[in-house]
Length: 253
Image (cartoon, rainbow, N blue to C red; front, side):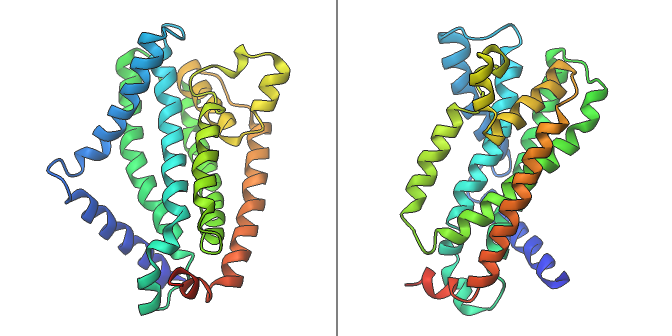
């Protein structure tokens, strides 16, 4: 097990180094690219459509930063076994290593952006209260959720490659149903309850409570997210264990 953990970290380091060397901006692009992405949405929804309150910039950025960590990891993780099909033929490693590398790589890049977000919130005038202390807990819950779904989609896509189109469309739908551009509490109670069936809506709402509003999150509903994630994680792990030796053949078929 220790050997495979070292392999994950080595592959993460190699992937990050290659990605950073592709452009003149290098590592700076990890921060600039999401900033440009978030800037577009702020111009559209915050300026042109004039949505939200005076804290709408912070409100929007918190939602977008949390979403991009989830969205990028799931999309790249879905095809991680197909992309590494050649490598799987050359050397034996548990195939679950590849989606795990995707998760760790995107988490490292996310932490860079998160650091910038926290600095922005401080400059924006938001005082860090005691609720900021639970931020690591929220990050751990989202990481658990991301790992569970990434392992799941990475195990399914080799058998059904076309499902990647459905995954991309599903993520687009979730993007607009996660409360990124609006406050769930502003919706009718019944509609808000339906929206909270989406774990990302719960997580984004919790981040905003902790970082902007200085309010403690609802741990009971976060506990449901944890339970759901653990169930998906166990199912995903079972799929990887069962089809581990078949993935290489399918990826190159």
